[in-house]
Length: 203
Image (cartoon, rainbow, N blue to C red; front, top):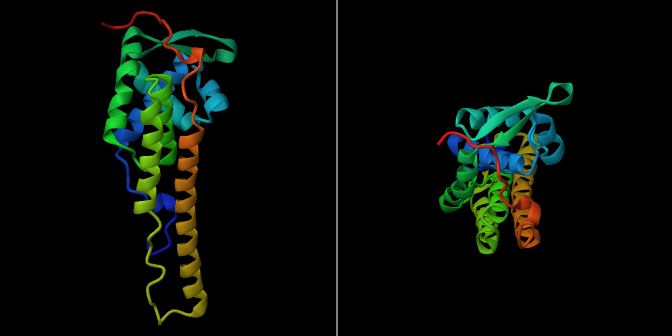
């Protein structure tokens, strides 16, 4: 959107496509490890849209991290992890932590949860969300709605001002939510979160 009227998503720094795919794919892999392994189940259990879940499943299949199981009721195809997928899940989450937060609250929450459920790291997950909150506060909501524009009529000036205030408020609320999540995250994964054994994949 041109001009000063930014939503908080527009003022966020753009994350690279590869980074977005990596954290989503790894999160889907962790969900498959928990038995949530169809697009329908991913939508119902984790609110992942088919537009996000299906491409992620396809990428994981191509990489050899998942296998197709036999179609179930209504033709829904279950997926299971390969041994390569298990190794990838155990190690790849660390690079997401090391790269730092992206500034996308959903993506950063997925990474923090992976640090608990896969890595069982109690320190990294909270620090990561606090860093994400700081990045959002420092980079978002600074449109030019407050700049002088004497040639505009009052209705336009008020529109600029209020949209700018709204963008600031949205950014602050996102940062506050991340800080709240850093405090509310579980201290450790439940027994169900442990790595499961799966069929052997490519070596």
